[in-house]
Image (cartoon, rainbow, N blue to C red):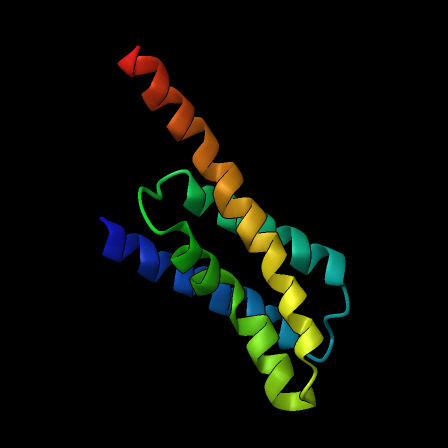
Length: 101
């Protein structure tokens, strides 16, 4: 299950990066929301290593920017999928704690 989820996270991240790289695309807010939402949905199913899923979704936009502009400040973009994955994990962790009680 985790391998399929990781493949889905990679696909989501690459799709968002592709759309963001289109010459007619100029909406950073929508891109940030897409990263947050996509990571949140993936986070619902993540059991272990949420950081890996964060990188799978969010690394591609900063990597592309760093390769093109050498601007490492673009790594801040990773905050959106990081918050999304952990926010998506929260309901599952809460439910498992409630079921154990």
